Image (cartoon, rainbow, N blue to C red):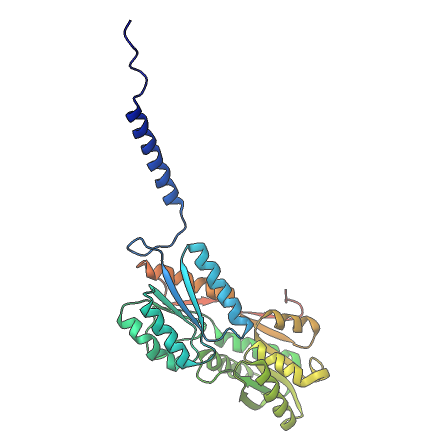
Length: 316
């Protein structure tokens, strides 16, 4: 009887195992969520945020980091501490770190143009977040509709004070599109109520402590004021501190951003309303756009995230 030849030889078994292993590796590769550039390497992004001493931008950072993790991209985040010179240095460092796209939340929209111009010249995609870049054409701008939000704030404040009386406006950082556009929207909106008079406007730089100081001074100068619009919740919360027991009673306050502290003040009755942005969604969509650009894919140049009014009936 001859020996059976049906049993695979060792070399055949090894080759079969290698083939199966290759198929498994290919399957795993197809299932990976790692973002990669055109050369197959992991996408590396740099993000400079104007300040992380503000809950709004902390939330924006979280949304960006969550989106980067979901895409398998590396995200380097820096805090410019409201210093345009520091932001310029950070963005320059991103270029030396060979990132494939840069996200910038400008300290100053006008100063941001020269900051990102070298990136644009080097064909590194740039995504502006929340605040526009003036003087340079970025690849994408992800932002809320601040003009529409300002109009909603005017309507909310008019409703709160009965469509008549004196009001005060606390402005944000001069030179930022967020402040300009919110202010523009508020002016256009409040003009629809002829019995409301804006008696004072002054910057408080989107800062709670400055909001307290500026509101204290303006309320002393205009004791008959019955309403305050602050271009962000931090300044609104400072104004509420300045008002003390008058907040929500004699004087109504409307903020902007819909932060956790702002919502808490609405529920407590000291803030009438806040125009809620979605900072985590802003960060998320900005990173998603940056990853696509790094891969050479096209994105919309203007990406808008909706705003809504939060008051005692709609606050989460």
